[in-house]
Image 1: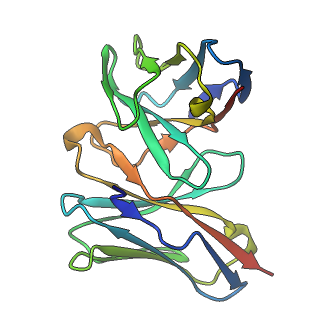
Image 2: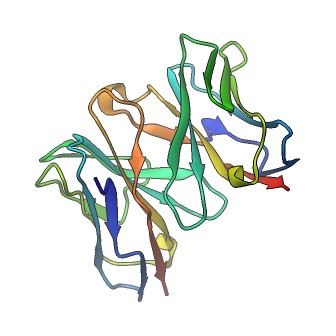
Length: 114
Length: 112
């Protein structure tokens, strides 16, 4: 049972345009959501997060939107750059009490074309 | 700070062999985690620890063991390697009360 779903395995966008990566979740107990970026042969690196008490969080070119009623979040990258090409994982926490355990989606491979 | 370091980077094992994947963090984080990532899949939690001497199972613990004798180190032990354990293994750490986890570079393990 996949509690965090990223239904698009891949996404291709032109440099300078907007990239929108989507994530759906099923467990209403999740109260914190994170996006990680992963380059080949490296570990995931934290990108941006959002608490369930907010509906938007912005950090430079990256914005995460949360729609609790739809159990949906999205990551917007504007403008997209070739260096953004990577796998993006959505993750959720809050189900494991104080242990900070994360549930990850399967990832979306973003390719930004020059 | 080196952050989270993992050794080895690559390893090939024969079925039935054993090995230990090493993980060390220098951020004085209480919490540490082991994940595996299979092709086309997300990261699955194997074991985690909330402090020295305290460990607990994650989603996919079968075939693995862990120990946490110090705050810095969290080794993962495979006792009888099986082809199903072919994967990339990531160690991560976080501070108590912090949601963000910091990951190591991973160990790519192949069991033949």
